[in-house]
Image (tube, rainbow, N blue to C red; front, side):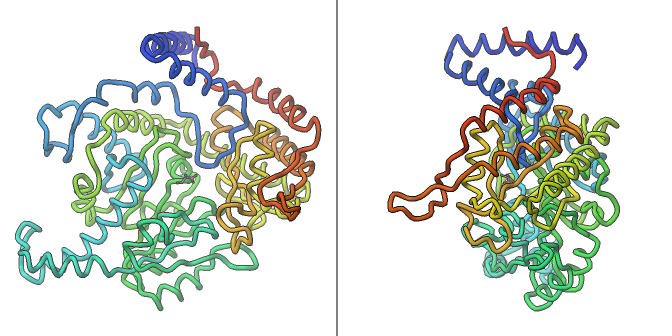
Length: 481
Ligand code: DSN
């Protein structure tokens, strides 16, 4: 931030907090504390980042007060001319940034984006043949009997996605999630030896299962995906290829993932969040080909409630930022830093799922430290290192205790961390885990949750982290009065 920018931002936030404090001082205080806490910790949660002050400020306006169900130029409420401007600009930035034929910026979150995509794919796949069969031009010509047969078909479809413990997301057909209930689902995993995606195995499963939707994408797989091959598999079995790029959208936007690794030219529908590596406001988005655009465009009211216009405005600002050259530098640094972090672990003898990374995240298997993911996550938090526990493939400790820790580089890269700092982060994490002892249950058996961190370790690691964090301040120049 330039000096002018810092002064403006400091003054704007200080005054905003004063206004908030005049109504509910405890919220103003919690807001100040959150900034202080984020500034003082090593944030390594792979799905988090730090949005710019411009993005954050855009969310705090009167657009929050406007209802605007419908789409641009076709709203169920009057007075939406400014929301139309905002939504059109956000969609235009998204189309330009990703080279997409169509962009839908209304989803409130990643799960909403996936629900919009699922229902749009179902609607498109079922309506198009149904319309052709009766020679109708659009959905309004379908009779009640047509709808009855559509309902039967909609409720009987198949989805093939990556399993949660291999790195897929719970919305990719995990049984407790709605995606695992609305679809007949099957999952593909990774190679048991290498931990890598086995495209032949995915193809074999797809041939046998014949899914309507093939979902690619992940939230904890530390490698790139060949989307051209996934599309070949989808085409061979007549499936729609949907890619959830929530985690790596920033690497696509920043042109780190190109060619076969860029999902947009290969998938029929691409979903994402906007707040992870893309560094925007908390929200979701759907990109689609022209063919799928009309059904995605019905996301509201099909699945979504009123769009969050203030967040759509912030998406426009964030997408404009991501179109700048500096974002490409940032995205490349995110991937380079993940490699430094992985190498830092490997050189100190730690085990990584797949043996490394080529995206923005690292999945550390903590069983060699004699710990569960839950114990490791808690011990690291005591030392000011914020991570999240995560399953590893075929995890013996299940999805609650887990055997892994997922670490991502997008947030600390935004602060300016580079190779040396990420190597040091790996050293500190290995230090903490090496000095954590698993605890016992009240009955004296091994506990999966309790642990004991060696004396003085937390303070030592916090002090070492503080040295790095002080060199790379979060929101430099932003001072609250
Ligand atoms: N919660 C996100 C993540 O951490 O990956 C995905 O839903």
